[in-house]
Image (cartoon, rainbow, N blue to C red):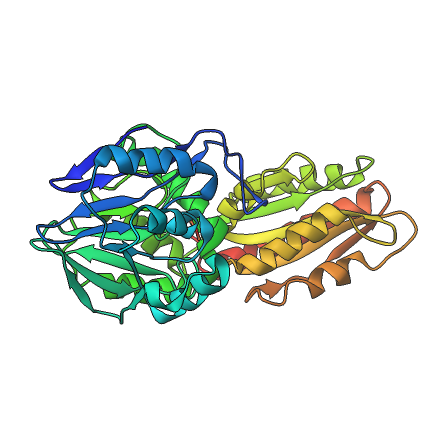
Length: 394
Ligand code: FEO
């Protein structure tokens, strides 16, 4: 149990999840996470920004009791996903006069997910304000960070932006504020990669919108509070830009060593060509690492053996995920190793329709690569390298 003071009359009352290792049953959390909830005590009214994952209800409610607000008038719901909204019904039980303040879309989600009734809501519009008495909340709609209903709240007097998932990072930590600015940017990049990357265009608009606010602190709903918001805003600007690095990612699986030989050979070629190369063995890979590398890679090459007359299921799964994440890669291709036949390259290519990348003709190699295959791999790596450079990678 820990209540931590952010500024005068503003407290962090959320929960730290030291043990959680998987989010959405998909995303690895190597360092745990936190679900941040903030209590803002005005002269007349008290507001709570978001709640926590229901599994951490006890810790959260203990923190809330320790903070000892005389009342809670408003529960601001920034985002309907249950890691922030899941304990709203519990807060309403403790403070039955509280109202849930949110936008129309979030309200409709909360009614579906938490079975909340219409009369507990106060519906607000973009730019509306709520006066707590010496503490003014301004609601800024910031859709698609991470769902269509997500919004931020700006505490005018203290210049704090409560951004929910936006600018968040997954790490369980006892400190409230960023202590290691390099580490938090790596954590935030992983987080951006895993859930924000498909929404680059909308994020750009959101960041432009925030440009008109003087922000002293960014207080997200996962990870530490930024006392220097510029570091995370600048990092986001890089990730959402069209710029890519001179880097190629090679997610691969090898069953009997042929694909591995192909990948090792290609890796050496890219090193010779001064292109950063990241081969990732999918049998031991972390989905978050793949997503992170896709944030700024100029190219991606899927390398697969054929099994059951198609691409290896682990490569299929990664191609599906890559397509869903919509990275800004400029070049994509496939290398495949086969024994007797199959349609694996077409299968993978067909799964990448969201990518705006130039597609280089896949390379199909029978059995263990031979001299003529290495020559083809030389050409293949040259073609990819040239396209990466022509694509403006830096
Ligand atoms: Fe942290 Fe989209 O929920």
